Image (tube, rainbow, N blue to C red; front, side):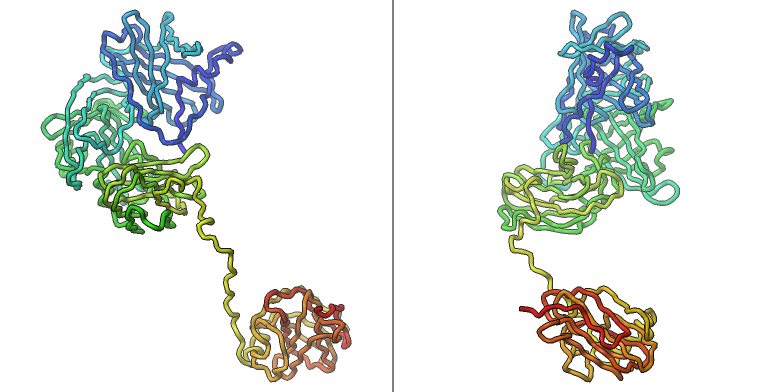
Length: 632
């Protein structure tokens, strides 16, 4: 679960503590709700006349942190009006980067509005007032709290800005026409010429006849073999509407993708140029420019053969790649007003493909194959899908018109995802269930509904079927159909049996029996034996007193019977009540017993409940069980 943390807010939230600290800490800010953020429109970069040049520069402070040795915070105000705040917590984790814009007026007053963190937009901009006190930048909020940063460098004549989008664009932007502004910037202190181009782009989305136009600013994908070591690599080129570009390569055997940052510009002749300036951890010595040729939903590199070979780099629109994915595990046909509402299916989420490569608004990892394909017809105000699980899944839906809809958590406390599709169009929807971490397997239930009262908070799988619980019929026990099989079972268990001889102490064992075979079905010569027994003996013992007597009895919690059988079937004895109408516990007494193995079966009378008790073998001929009164 990812959370956005406005870092300038961190610098002001606990200002009251500064009075008792030798330096001003940047305290931790309250964590905002974790629901998926909506794109925030970044304030437009102001004209140079409204950018007081004395503010342009880089400011820094070394500050304490609550859960790390400390943090280095820099504030960069570029000449083009962009603003970047970077916080390195010195905990071996990548720095946190906030982006936005700053502006001023003729009087020299200035302010900054931060709109995104690490490419993820805030719900609303965080706006702060700027002032200069000598070589210190003073940042204050509406409550009057103040943080100070020392100037470390004066910005170069050319703008210096981290190449991070100030507002994440959706993977597919639908509309008749869009206007994009491309800005060539640099990262990590490099300088480059700034070019601003306004271009109106109208492109028909491939594979969607009559669909609205799709912007050039999109995500393009390719699945390629790895250069070495076997396996595959997923290459994703994202062109943001603000002119930023990102080229990410994810290898099957690596935990995190290789990310290159830069900018792009439309050349106006069905080609565009991507300029890569570095990675998040540092800038390249020289920018790398790659020109691509557009061909419908595909783009093809036409230079840089030394990087991409003679065939170049060929990528397709992410939505089209997703649309061409292998068939899903489950296909569902639903018409508006479908009677089985909600409809749900048990599926498993997770996979190895990083969906953030498809869209900056998406998180998690999915399988290349969707889990469900929904073929939708008819008209409805909305269709909602959500995934119920015991883990932290994510959800991605590709609509027939090429939109990629994503969600991570329903709210702060509920980690299951929800996607609502308003006025769903007729066509095929592909649904992926992901996991927040790579290569997890998350079982759960995917639900589809058009009922407002059914949602992830009210859905109760156990309440859908109202009948009371009914016990499953137990399968019949394996039956011993003949005396030969009964004797074979005695011999098989005899290897681990207890040996008794005349004069030995009695041997007792606690047993619970729930036999289902009538004793007479064992195929023994005496059909008078009764009770329900198991197919094998409940106890086997080895008698070592040839010609001497022994007795066997059972002290149970309900009415039971006994069967004692020698391994050669020469002795068969059945027992029921020790004393009629007085003691219904069973006993079998043998006056002259041959040496050898004996098997004991305990039979129950009531088929509705098991019998629990203690079975005893005694060397005393007339031993009897404790009394158990007759059933009233």
